[in-house]
Length: 357
Image 1 (cartoon, helix red, strand yellow):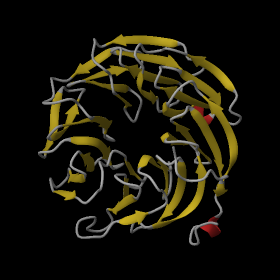
Image 2 (tube, rainbow, N blue to C red; image 1 turned 60 degrees about the horizontal axis):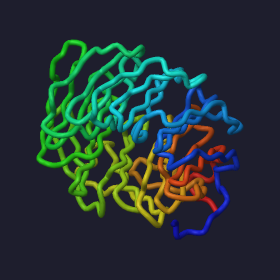
Image 3 (tube, one colour; image 1 turned 135 degrees about the vertical axis):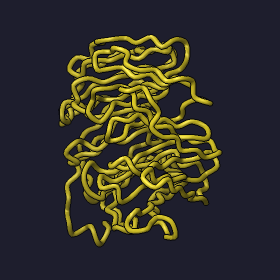
Image 4 (tube, rainbow, N blue to C red; image 1 turned 180 degrees about the vertical axis):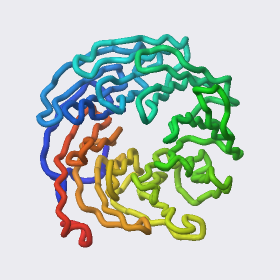
């Protein structure tokens, strides 16, 4: 249980709505331009709520035998995909939750889903393979076996597919079926994030470090000293700052100038237990963090990665996921007890330099 006392929303966070799902909530996201909020729990339950009020729109139970592992909402917000321990991927309509297509990938767990930035492709990772389908569920590409289980997938701004596994990150041109680039490093990579321009690759490692590559120069660097695995990474929309987990503190690296090599990172010390979720706002230098202690904090950052808290709220238990509404005027958090919280977020510029009380 969290060791902090429950508290009311403060600063830029204001009361919104609260709801519950059936089990540990592990995935969430906004659909239909923020009109709906969809939550998935570990038991395979899916729930859609009105974005403004929290009124339930539809719900589905036991969507994946053995449990849900991942959910990804299409960039246009009209459809979404889910995957589970049953080896299936479902592409569904956001309006009613109706299944449009079921993809059977075999017996392996399907742990990672990611839509391309333009929404044309859905990447799916299961064990050592990655599959790519289009919006209507037609298969477009399959990778060869990776050296080990694929631990992360994402897309560059040029619709290249990036995959991470033990020892390397690989960029694939899935349209022309060729490998564009391999970035190698002997370590177990557990997370991956690309800068918005696709040039900087950041990976969290099993050995409690973060590894960077610059694709344009081939240069790489390693940032060590984390107490735990940096499982959560987030770039701001300009690509200047990278926020990383790995302890109860958020470590923020600045890529301005010649950084982050040879520079000190910014640190945000707002939680009492390790960070369990992390997300920059869609625009600007606001980063939201959720912790195992149940607290959620939003901070406004400076160019050096340091910053001040501008709002906080208590989510009730370990924060499983957080999500900014597309207009950044609300922040949602879901927790290990299945509680869903959505807070209104109102900017008060005089707080940026002073923090909040």
